[in-house]
Structure formats: structure tokens, C-alpha cells
Length: 342
Image (cartoon, rainbow, N blue to C red; front, side, top):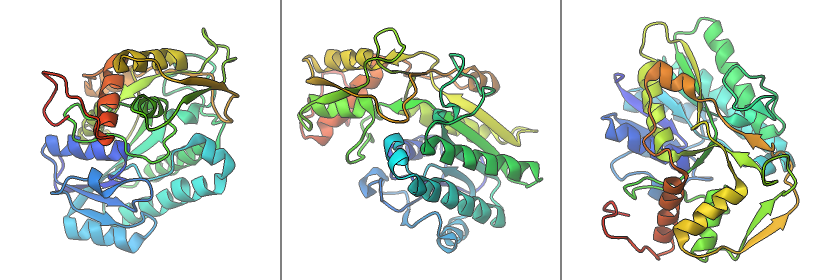
């Protein structure tokens, strides 16, 4: 465990808020910076300081680092919608790339020892092989992927230049689910993630869900993705933060997934099982920037750090996501034996 406090940027968002919980569960002191453009104040525990600021405001970030004795940063802040990045690429190069450059420079100037970056499997584009490991070519097919890859390159070059800061880059596959204890979940307004949208349909928040593309070269014609439970991903961040303390660990790069793909139709079937009722499903054209299939080879993080997922099950991911959605909708129907607080 590092000395000092861990700063979580974007800690009021979906993944960041779960990382805050995992860090606190592991005994870390935490402070959050979030501009609340996507995150919500309620996602941050009452006893965790929340500073509403932009990570591109180096003065504000420096002040937080000094006031809270920050020694490590987990960087989640940024924009994450693939289709939006295609329509408004400059927003993504500003929020994800330029803002990250400012944050990295601020961290270096402040003497931050460890920096963990939230990247994405979108950096692989359309992989030539499946599953895809960390050595695969990185050729993004959308601005979102490019904006993240550019930040990866900045970090790699900074480490190569001999900085004292140790860096980890985590490439997420599809993140879903909610905290099993009911403390957090996805609150993003107008979300586009499949399991979140399907859960909203299940509780009546949306009338239907659309499958974007049914003619992909996959077994059932719909896109195939590797889904990881958000709480497992949060635990991976704690493992990586601790891994950066190992001798010789200057730059780590890991895929975060389960190594198993599910099609859109398979995921919707899982939501229907958890819901106990069918969903209203519609079919539409492909979305720009969507690869047909994206499945991880995530063996490296397990081998290097001993990280083992606890929630590697699609039905569990869907059940936790749906339970959270019912909670948000005021429709919580806690089954006997469910964890307290659901």
C-alpha cells in the first residue's frame, strides 16, 4: 500500500466510483476530482472528499495533491461514447487527450509516484486475431480509441524519458454490472452500454432496445464482446496499484476482461432470464465505429499480479446491473438472501 492518498479522477462516474469503493475496502485514503459532467455527487461516499474541478485545471489539481498528500493517481476522467466520438471528434481529443496531457504534467511536477490510466480495448480497432493480447497491433477505428491511444503513448514516452513516476495502463473490455453490496452502479444519463440500456428497458425506463447491426460476420450476426464485472475491474486497479511497487515495475500494460465473448442477442437473453420477462427488442442499422468482435486475452494480469476475478459470470453481471436499475427506479425487489443494501 503506498504512502499518502490516492487521487481518483472521474471518481463520481461508473467505473471510478467502484474503484473508490475498492480502494477504501483495501484500506487506502482516497480523494476524488470530478467535474460532474458525467458523474454524480451521490456516487461518492460521504466520507470521501469530492473536489468539483476539471483535470485540465492544473492549479486545482496541484492544490488537491498538496492538501491531501496525494502520492498516486487513478485516472478515469474523460468521455467514453464511441458514436459520439465519431460525431464530435474534437471533444474527445480535448477531454481525453489534451486534458490528460495536462494532468500528466501536473502529476510529474508534483512528484506523483504511481499513475494508473483507464484505457480501452478500442485501441485495437478490428483485431486480426481473437482473443487479442497486449502485443496486438493498435489501430483504432474511431476517435475515442485514438484519443485513448494517444494518452497511452504520452505515458509510454514519459516513462522512456526517465521520469520517476511509475505507470500502469489498463485496457478495458466491456464493463457492466454493479457493486454486489448495492453501494454503487451506473447512473450515467442517456447511457449507451448494452446491459445498462437493457436493464432500463426491463424496469420500464425505456420502451425498447435496438440491436445495431444484425449482419456482422459473427455466429448470430450481432456484435460479440467480452464483458467484465465492474467490481472485478475495480479490484484489478488495486492489484495494479500495488504491482507498481514491485521492483522494476516502471510501465505495466494489461487487458482487463474475462477472455470470453457474448453476442448482443446472448446478452439480451441473459437480461430476459434475470428479468423473468421478455424485452421489447428492435433491429437497426450498424453504428459507426463498432468492430464485429472484441474479446480479450487477459492472462497477463493474472500471471503478473495474481489477480483473480470473483464475478466471472454473465448472469451475475446482468443480475447485479438489473438489481441496481430496480433500485434507481424505486422498484427494488430484494430477494431473500440478497446482500444487504441492494
